[in-house]
Image (tube, rainbow, N blue to C red; front, side, top):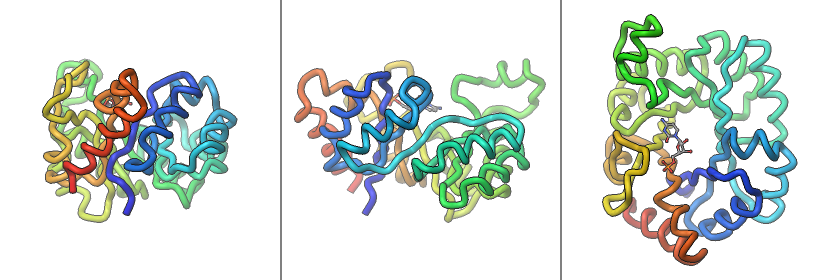
Length: 231
Ligand code: C5P
């Protein structure tokens, strides 16, 4: 079975990413690579990581452009065969459909409302809905346009699950094991609570990666401990 934990490789160093993967590969199958790593190292950097360890890729590029450009962007990363590739659902139905058509073997994953946006921020942009209602609207648009997965806050999981049905994969960042520091995450749940609420995958970064400063083994044990708490 695929592990429900996705480790965020939030680093701009190939060697660090490589060390984190090697330390946790026993309990993690999917690794999230985002703009910080990808804009610096690109496809060659990812190939370098995969030469050392096999893993599935969550490519978090949050694409948002006109449909033709997004289709071209998906085609440009298709050879990496990411399991998940993120697009902003706010790009609209034609954009999401273009991404799905360009990457039929990829789970095109809709990002709903950035958690950095609150009701005031949305309102100042002319969006009358609050963050939860808007996230539900965006999730519905993405799924109706062929997205197979949605990224949402753990606090939105159950409402979005109701809105999109049982077959869409819900991926949630912002989870914090009981004993870990909040960092800059404010609206959080524990991994167990997020899975219970209906999440399929949890994106976890610092609650696991911060253990690497102790040792690679400590980081590996931390990932294993969180995985076991979900069993
Ligand atoms: O270290 P931490 O567990 O907070 O990392 C969570 C990961 O999920 C980071 O890569 C972060 O950018 C991402 N993320 C998030 N909140 C969102 C969307 C993505 O924390 N709403």
